[in-house]
Length: 182
Length: 315
Image 1 (cartoon, each protein chain N blue to C red):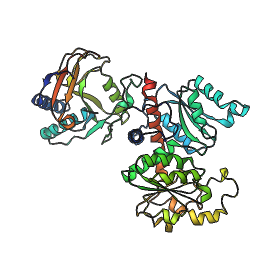
Image 2 (image 1 turned 30 degrees about the horizontal axis):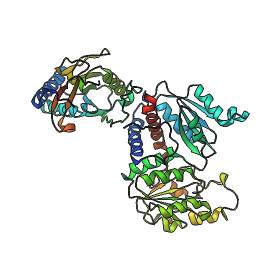
Image 3 (image 1 turned 45 degrees about the horizontal axis):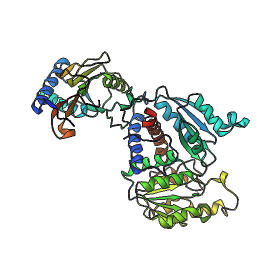
Image 4 (image 1 turned 90 degrees about the vertical axis):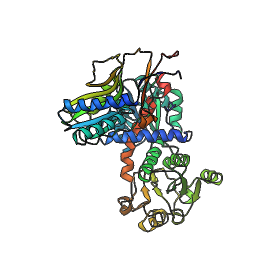
C-alpha cells in the first residue's frame, strides 16, 4: 500500500474529540437525556471516548450504544459489498432521547441515512444529531454533521484511513493518494 | 467473507468457516428479533417463494416470518392446491415460479434430491427445507446455533442423536454440521431404524459412533436430541411395538440422569409425547425445544441474507 500523509495525530484527535464533547454538552444544555450511538466499526470506540469526556465535564454518565447498519444499506447489490454484520447493542429505549450518532468519516452521507433509519426502529428520539471526526465532503444526500472534528477537503479518488487505539493499536488519520486501480 | 454459493442444499460440502459465518450472521439476526420493530429493509424488492410438496407448520411459517422480517415479498405455494395436482412436472412448476419473479425458492419435497434437480435447472437460489429422508440443512443450522448459544461452543461436545435415524433428514444434516464443528456424535436407535450405511461410515470416522443402547449412549452427553418416530413413513415390521420402543429408546427423567447435569434436551418437532420423550421432560428446564423454534427464524433470515449477497448474485 502506498504511504499516505498523516492528517491528524493522536493529540489532534484527542483535542478534536474533547471540543466535540464540549459542544454536545453546550448544545443540549448538559448531559441529560443524551444517548451516544457509535456506528460500527470505528464510530463505536469514538462514542465511548466522547462519553468519558462528557462524564468528566458534567458528572453524568451517558448511555453508549453501537449500531451496525449493514442491513439498512442501499448497496447490497454492489460489488464491493461485504455481508459481515457486526454487533448492534442499544442499551436504552431511544424514545424522547437526544441521540447523537457518532462516526469516524462523513463522506457520501449514505451510512448516516441508513443509521437514521435503524435508530428510528428503536423508538422515536426527540432529536438525532451527528458527530464525526472528519468531514471529507462529497455528499450525495442532504445530510450535514452537527459536530465536526476537522473538515478535510479531498478528491473522490483519495482514501482516508482512520486508525484508533481500540481497533488498530494507534491513533492517527492518514490520507492515501489516488489508487491506480481505483 | 461472503458466502460464495447459489443454493443451500445440505451441509455436507460446507466448510467449518462457512458454517461459522452462518452462525455469526444468525446471531445478528437474533438481535433484530429482540427489537421493538422486528423488521429491517434489507431484502426490499426481492421475491421469495415457499414451495412445499409436503406438510409443514413450523418450517414453512419460520421461513415466511424470516422473509417478512427482511422485507422480502413472500408467496406460499402448497403442492396440493397448485398445478402439481394437474400433473405439472417438478421442473415446469419451478420454472413457472422463477418466471413469476422468484429470486429464491424454499423447497420441501418428499423425494430425496428434488431440490438438487431444481437447483441445476434454475438461476433462482434454491433453499432445501427438507427432501425425503436426505437433508434438512436449516434445521441443522438452528440446532447448531441453539447449542452454541447455550453452551458457548460445539467442539468437543458429546451429542447424542437418538430414535428414528433411518427416516430422519434432521439427523443426517446434523451429523454433517456437528461433525464439521468438532463435536462427537453418537447415533442411537434400534438396528431396524439405523441405516447400515451410517454404521459403515462410523467404522472409519472417529467422530461418529453408533449405539443400539440409549442407556449406554447417553452417559456424559452434553446434548440429547430426540427424533420423532416417523410412523407415517414407516413400513410395517420395523418395530415390534411402540410400547417396547418407548421402554428402550424413550427419554425419561431416569435415563436423562445419566447425561451431564445441565445437558440440553432437543427435539426438531413435532413431538410424539409419551413415545420418544415424556411430557415432563419436554417442558423441563433442560429442554430447549421452544428456543429451537425461535432461533429457526433468525437462522433462516441469515440464510436469505447471505444467499442474496453472494458474489455471483452481486455481479
